[in-house]
Length: 611
Ligand SMILES: Cc1ncc(C[n+]2csc(CCOP(=O)(O)OP(=O)(O)O)c2C)c(N)n1
Ligand SMILES: [Mg+2]
Image (cartoon, rainbow, N blue to C red; front, side, top):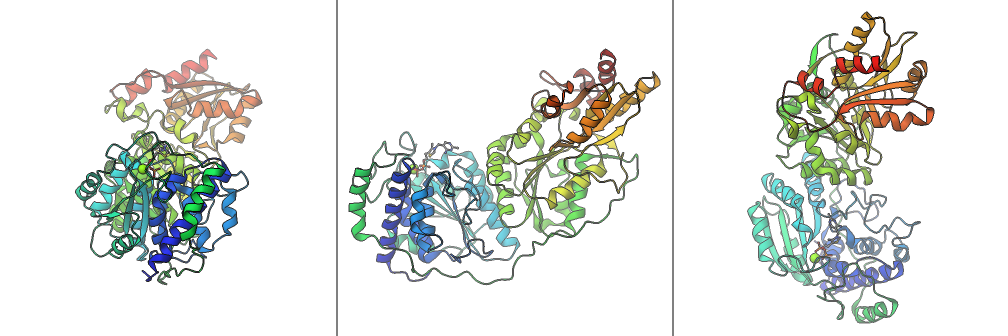
């Protein structure tokens, strides 16, 4: 902390309030009162406490700041404008189509690491960043500003739990306890001792302060990193603070002031407002840069055709193999690592693995946090449990995060564990994520090659792996470009093209053999790349089989492989007949279930004959 004059910080806080009001009034929408309550905290953090190179927001050892209560975006923008990063006049472009100063922060802006505003997600991302700092031996701190209404989200407490367990003393949560939420007061109002007890119970050091007393804010911030616990600062504040007719008033959430009201507010704030331009900002320590270089290639594979390996196991083998030469790779799991086989990576690289326990929203947030720090995070659990983190995955899409998800135990083919453990909606969800890539391998070689590509490409990737062992059907040098498909069986005179992936591919191959014995030829395609789909290969094959395609998938009929093929190829006149799981599944042997739900070789044979 630089000994910034307290009067200057008070002045900057008011300047930030003025900007927040002016920009939201110009935009005609926004949350000025949510900015005003946090203005003193923001001024103290940005103008004397946090160590960062304001001209280079991406510098790897800058302190990180996550505005988890993303609706206070105008305050964040005002703070960065006052550091001199961009002209203060730009603030008037808030929320306009041509401006990157969006309604809630997104990484279009260089000083925003992840999109926020879907409340309750910032602290998990902060945990990932704090863990990355530790791994990279960097001394930046991660500051997360949360609303008091926001911390009703369970995901906040998933993050608080793990931060306490891992003693993240480089992580600081600041709760802007302004008593109010959106439509009414928060459940606990200004009874903020409740929040202190909760954070303490999760192993945090807690400071309860007057969030408008700059001296007190600066003083507690001096204590960052002094012990081995994360620090929670519960700042008692007033929504709309600093403006007489807004302060602590109900009914002002998410409302801009009209021009007259804004003028009145500014008249109150202006006399004590001071510009932040030129205020001293502590420089970050110059430490060695982390090694986040992508390798040129990966060690070779050594499978034999016919080896029986589950794709989930091949995933673990792949991570351990490529992790050897790719220092960017880190992994995390939600207490299923012995099922997803992420434990193969954990055993080899314990320092690069984070056990996230059974808290999938936080699991995805932590991975996203690592991704912002140049790591390639692979998060794994049963595919169906990723659907709990649907919103975190959605926001990772918006953030264009580098996030790799590996979901195992898909479909009815898991068998005995029964319906609650079966992922049957995951492809629908993952396909719908903006910019996502969805991969569904059927053997060990294709799994491993796809994991390599997930590591080398940026963005949100989902790998769908299966529980049962399946034979290796590809040679070790086969390539599986994302957006491709493999034609495995094809002969002149084939009647229909069967498109399958994962376990159903092996059923399709069995069906092809059975039909061949009866003199009926079918084309079989491995659609290992669900999104983007291997459209070219599927279309070319379909056109040779009278435009007739059967899709077979261990997923519900809605939103999976069949819908992907139909959606992409109907414009070309291709007719798609879907074989997929319908109805509520049950326990049983995998073979019984794939037969019952009509996605096995016999069902394919029957369908082919019916056509
Ligand atoms: C997950 C989620 N649920 C609901 C909302 C809608 N919403 C936006 S702000 C807000 C109130 C937030 O209150 P608080 O966290 O106390 O922030 P304050 O504005 O008081 O600082 C709500 C309900 C949201 N953005 N995200
Ligand atoms: Mg509040």
